[in-house]
Image 1: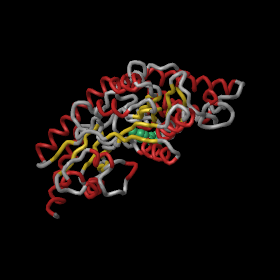
Image 2: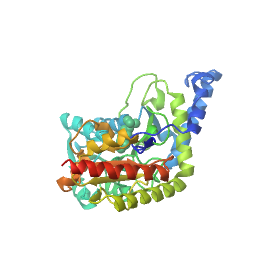
Image 3: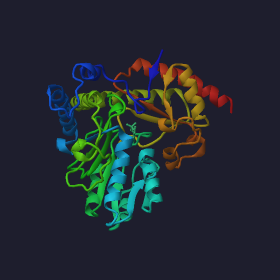
Image 4: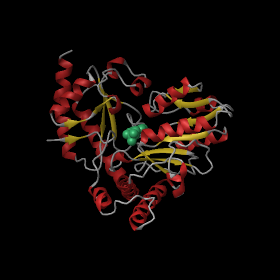
Length: 380
Ligand SMILES: *Cc1c(COP(=O)(O)O)cnc(C)c1O
């Protein structure tokens, strides 16, 4: 049996998304900048996708900028804003549980002379709002706090965070790669100025994403060239991928509520079964404000990498730490940030459920996991 429980690393392309994309490889292959009918077809599809994505977050279509993915969007938001506003301040506020696309961009900016505050997260994975209030000053240009954590699934309270950032007069960027299409987002009530999104986390193709940029935000261009994307990110648009992303977003918007309910039920079932069958387990990150499909669990005195490899031998795909740093045996920066007892820190396993996860897959996983944990523990 093959079981995929790593939907936060990437997702298969939904059949409906693939069907929408296919005509744009051969029949409607035009360059969206061309004036003839081929170009107009591509341009129309591009603007439809922009509209679909804008609707999910209550933005205007002209505030949607297509990029190559979440990483590019994060890089652009931070460097682009800091470069254009360095006369106004030199300070950035973020936290120590961000994705590396944000953390390593901040490290780069530090090397360029900007100052960065990395707020610590609480042991339950949440951000302390009072610490945020204290950290943001008149010299702060931008605050970058992710919406949903990719490892532990914690959903940050963007409304409360956005309010603090706005009161302090800074710009608010959020990495929504894990939340877009899965958790409701409203850029206006949440006071979001920039939002990063990625298509392959929500059943769309890889290599395409969006940076939402609120009208009036002073950000440097990312690519110089023919003037695409309102002259901020030049380069011929990847129409098939963009059509796929737009279709995936539309499906997610329509099915979000129902899908969340199903995933929470499945996850609760899974977590109950794990606790019934395996002693000394610990939930990482709080239960309540959590991405519906995320379950991150530590197994006392087990080595996460051994567990992952053993599960893989049984056809079960999960993640230990985060997928972007696979191969590393030490606890990820997020698990480290939770400050848990060392006998639990090395064995955090992320199970992420998705659109095609079934109960029988979860039953199989628990039965395999029970044997693996017993064996790994007996080797100690
Ligand atoms: C996946 C992910 C990214 C990177 O997105 P890509 O499209 O893979 O570049 C950034 N941030 C978070 C939180 C992610 O989960």
